Image (cartoon, rainbow, N blue to C red; front, top):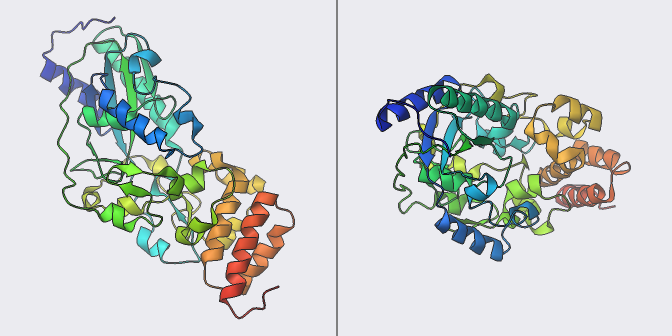
Length: 362
């Protein structure tokens, strides 16, 4: 186990660590212990109800997710950092959601995939701490292992878990990424903060599919982010009309949150919109070949869902649009060369288009 090798007081050490974190591009740093018993209990209850859907990785690692020392032996502290991603300038989200010719992409995914960027910065921060404070055993994480990042962020004072299950910060809202450094150094802890949602239920009320089944409980099987990103097969028919033009993720619960009026613009140019994804034309996206999809979205988090799921999501959005002969022609043209899974969504979209317009149902 590592030992601190510094003459700095606890407050001075934390001040230095926060400065080092900002130097490599993070906006906040906190330190927690590894006692996640309450979070483990909540996770078990969530899994027992099947709310994780097809995300089998949520159960694959046993207790490692809630017990950091089982993932990296001798871990006694977790450093959590926050990196803001709100992309400005970008198209106003509600105006995109209200325009059925456009597709809505979750604001976190408009630019470069954050995983590699965050991991690189986390390593830089860890090495700086190691150089300035003490040799340490450590490992960095950014959605790369079974880590309860929200519970750790809450314990370290980054924010509190809101009723939509995202971490909220009074000065920065919820538009940020989290990353962690597991370490064996006995670093000073930063205190948790109280929650400030009060009686507000705006996120619960606005959810298109009512996926927030109770405060702080999300049934992923109903969540549009899950349906458009994690689900590999057919999207349940009952949820398709509720998806509107959301083709990758869903931000409604964050967009409506009063705390996000304090959201800060990202300092990372990599998170700014690429390929006009902040307000993309649906038919243009639908026309992308697989080669275009892979080339245009190189370095994007969207790429990992694959071309078929991308077209599946866009088909649903086109089905929800006002009836238009251009949409009908595009759907018919794409159908012949599509997989059975995609054909089923195209057929659904055609049915919606033909039944809502002045076209004969054929």
